[in-house]
Amino acid sequence: MLKQALKKFLILEGVLAACVVEDGGTVLEKAGRVTMDLEELGQRVHQGLIASSSMAYELSRDELTMIFVELKEGTLLATSLDDDHILAIMTKNNTNIGRIRYELKKNRDTITAAL
Image (cartoon, one colour):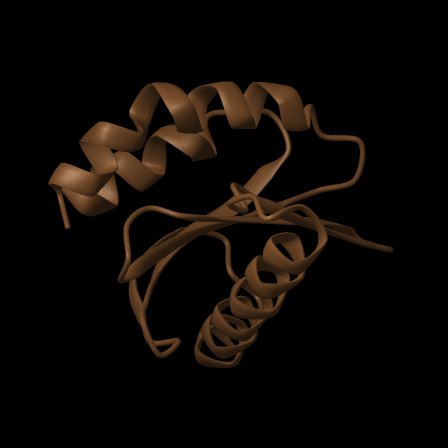
């Protein structure tokens, strides 16, 4: 069920892969063409979300909803699904990030229910 929910992102133009990372950085499930070390990615996404959440709180006393990391070869989006899981999506350059965010909001409950 979780893999099927992740595969919905793969039909979006420019999306290369999606994965769910557990608390601590372990990759629970993945879908798509992943050419990188997912365990390393999971660790970095987990650490990045913690650091970004802390910065958001210190700057505005507000809750972080999503982080974007723009790289030369594409973009990484990461968002908390609940207290123990993070969704990470890797895209090509020039991908419609707004469309991905819309699909994430639309499918968040389905993904969370599949955990």
